[in-house]
Amino acid sequence: MFLYRLLYPEPPPVEIVETMDEVRKRAPVPLAFELVRQSEIFLEESLYPQAFSLLLDVLASGNITSETGTVASTPVVIPQPQHLAIAATMLVHPHTTTRAKLDAEKEAPNIALRLLRLTNALVGPTAAQFHTAFAFTHFETTRHGTRRGGSPALKEAMSDDRKTSFGGGRLVWNEAEDFWHAVGWAFNCSVLHPALWKHWHLWLQFMCQVLEDDWTEREQQYAEAQEKETLQNSDGEALNVEPPEQETHKGKGGRPRKVEPKDGLEVFRESLLYQYVALSNIYGRDRRIMRAIFADGKPNSAEFRAVFEDEIKVHKPKKKRSSLKKRAGVDLNKGEYGDYENDSEDEYTNPRDSRASPSAPPAQNRLLRRPKRTRRTQATIDKATGSGLDAYDKTADHENGIASLGGYNSLVLRQRLLVLLYRLSIKLPKDFMSTEDACHMFKENIRDLPLPVFQHMVTPSNIQGLELGAHSYLCEQLSYSMHESSAPPFNDDLLTQLKLERCFLPYMAASPSAANNAKISMLLEAMMTLLHDSKMLSATPELKEAVRNGIERRQSACCGDSNAVALAYLRESSLRIQFMVDFVLP
Image (cartoon, rainbow, N blue to C red; front, side, top):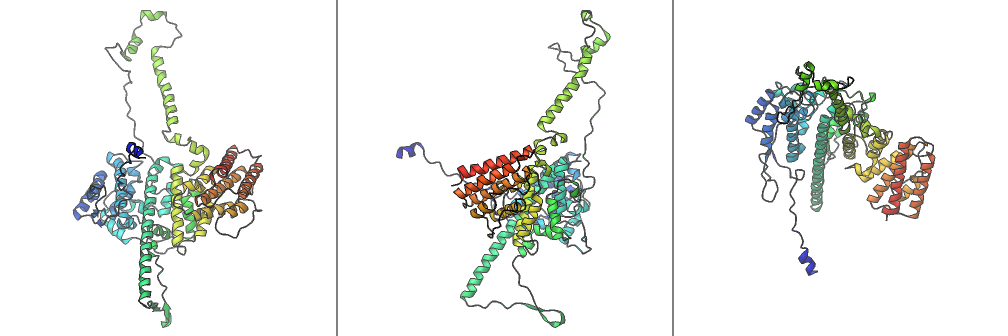
């Protein structure tokens, strides 16, 4: 043992350096008036890189790293809300994305995104006043005519930036009807307009990160408040202090009216996510939000139109026309004269060439036919590498159905929004909707998706942040809506191994189609994975028998189906279930 330790000594402990996501939030300091004025001058002169570089330098100036590798907890100077609103707009505005002409316009989105991400990482959404900067103020009144609660702070902040090309009504926060309008249009672009989706994807990805960080901060504040209240109550009971009397107010007729006690959930009602949900206070609000998240570019998603005027138009650089013919390379030392010898052949004839066959094409004609072969080769290269918009429609994603919702990047963002809505339903069921209603709405929109998309939406490894109980409940509701009616009901609300063996595993889909049976098999696979992760599943004889009977019934029910892709999905899912029972489960 001593010799082993001598030959293989233990390595020194690795010093853990805090990443940007792990850095403790720092106290914000407002931007000085001189810097505010200087940034406004840059924006008025359309010097966007200079404006955001100035703000970025000021923001990063206090990031002094100590010897231990941690960022010093000094205050940080943050941009004002109008700067953040303009920076987020430049990520998707046509003048800085698809129709950008100047170098300054092309560089602006990259610097703006760095500024937004660094601000969020250093101080967080609450201290950065994202609820003011990212407030939608398109309509002063709602569709029902009632006045909409705008953001006076944002209007006051934006009053000095009207002269900039991105001030006033040209911001995304003024052009879009609300957040869900922008979400629906972004997901429509993921299917119909890949050139626009490249920019909207960055904007929506950042917004999802902001919503998640803001909600996490609210949960921490709520937990701290609950802990503080518990300590106060325990101290009051120890001192025999009577609780305060309930406050009353006089209502109509002078009668006393009780005021409902505060539920302590105001911290969640002040969140940016609830602000976006409450802003869409129209009939069918919840279903409209679901339609925005599952927008797929089809006619039923046409309500989410373009945010900016003529946004679909893409700037194409003009090609310079040259009247001079392109000549081949010239190297006098090697005796290569390019096309100059070919020009002389037009006027002079070499006696040695008089014996050539009259049917042979001239050298100049052979040279003129080469560009055609070159163009075919370049088209082949573009097709193989996926360059250009035409190649986007011919990728494997479109063939297997993933691109019906915009590809994997789009699916990930849709899932993140669904998880955020579920977290909102847990804390504010009366203000938004209950968790059961949320899962039912998820079920209605997921059930009829193509097989690849359906598999991605229900696989546990693809969904981050959703509780195991909520995920299992969603899988149960999807399975109940699709499997045969002979499956017995079960009184237990929670998913257990006994419930899985009796109500789900032995049964097939209500219709004999291979696609529906493949979806049932995917749901069973997901539920078994969730139980296995919770250490609530073991390979008992009853489980093995239920798995075997279910696989045989589902495969025999769709043996006459000609959908080879669906049959392959069913067969592969059945193999994974059988492998889990034989080799994974204890």
